Image 1 (tube, rainbow, N blue to C red):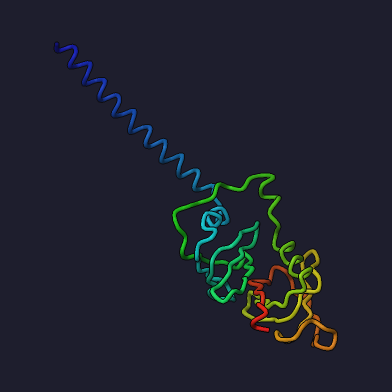
Image 2 (image 1 turned 60 degrees about the vertical axis):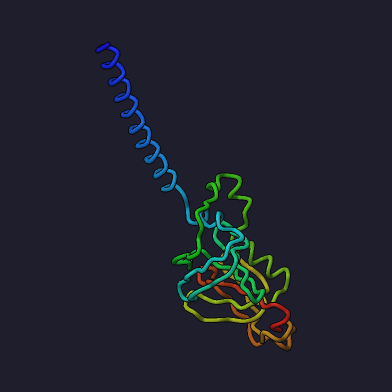
Length: 189
């Protein structure tokens, strides 16, 4: 009887130590997995949720996170404006829930367009936009073209369509200086 009790005690102690070791390994694994996550993965888990971005030179940008690319975020505000935000200017994000998307790997991350390709889409659509630079300057007009490291903006009033007579100037903007590109809905025009 004493042997059975001894073996039962040893078995219980072994199981307890094994469970503690497993919890420790699990916590280490979780910390390692979290350590490998990028902010963009964390943000993809918040798609469809309202967030508030603090952005260098731009200030606060609030809206529902509609999409997230390799180096940009797309928010839609309560007035129907879309904000294409370069992640390089984002300093903090408020409003994140508990969900995190799995890390984008290999081919999956190559499928997502980068900021340059997103801007090319705006140029193709001939949308009137406000370009907010990382120093806070606001430019208004239509993106005419997007080069390897710059965009060309035909500056004109927000309430005028892009016509030769409406263009005040054409400005080249270095892509690394772009903080936010806001579309201007027709109701504003």
